[in-house]
Image (cartoon, rainbow, N blue to C red; front, side, top):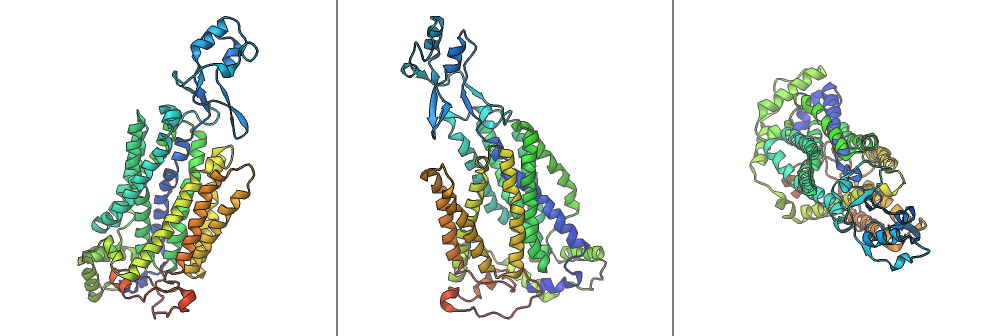
Length: 489
């Protein structure tokens, strides 16, 4: 669809229309930032020990009814056992003193049959304290995050196909509604199973909303503004939401109140339906030329420029309709060797980046004694990262940018072993993530360079590209003469 950019060139790149679309789409991504990492606070495990019901125990026995264990060289109260309460009652009634008259290690222990007592120093409640996801039930705590990301995976798979069929705008607002509604319903969860099912549905809309907004903006905006939005604008919207999350969580330390507060802002986005347009590119691909022209003419009024009598030429429309009538699927990305190689490499790079990003982000409570500070720092450091990524995309070759970024991410993961008081098993996840980053950097050498060149927008255009060769073996790529009017990603 090369003619599309030429056809709307009269609008300019940064008029009032583009500014409204840019900032509203960035704002629509903010809920993704706090929605993606809510589980950091909802599933955190506060310190806990077996509940000891009110009984006739002396002060000495009440202070010693919970066994003491040594964990990483430090003494801690046992989280999942206590000395058998009936035995302790008898010893207390007979006036024995623990540690002097009775050797505590000889006493029989039992599980937390009366429940647990949770520390409220950091949280008033989490789903862990609400549904007792500790000890024999502790497997449910990490499994909750797994279920959420299964929903994210399925949502990312289906949302693209739905947006191709029904449009970018309907899918964007539908997924925003899914996030808002099911986050609100989660507040009323009465069991872990109910909470997890609702969380799965919430996950369906999580990444789908982000991708729909990203694609919609990339198809409406052109030139350097398109690069700015796709690399920094949309990501900063996500980072702002991420930074707001610990602020909400700090003042609302009850998990139900936190979810309620995070769901209500979704209502603010309802008026955006009348302000954010559908993608003219998608409308043209569906043969809806009049609707596409109506959006462009409205944009011309907003930008105070004169639109030509005929915006889209017949040959551009015919070319678009030909592509739209061809039935394509994800399988077509693997039919030819050039597309298959690019797809596999980009998939591997994306897997590495995503795994590292979420693994480190969900591990933020361990960075500092205060999880709120840890989470905010983790979110704040993304701002300079996104700005630097935009600068790299603006001035550096794409392939070099990817390789440098992956290597910069790998080095700290290896150096973390220098932190004292750590064990090898705690290093292992970081070593794996660092190794994946280096492997991805090597694989990125085989990606085609796209800096200063328009990206192919159809499968057919991808098939016409030259076979991918490692630049260190084949030398420089032979550039294809192209117009630099639209400098996409």
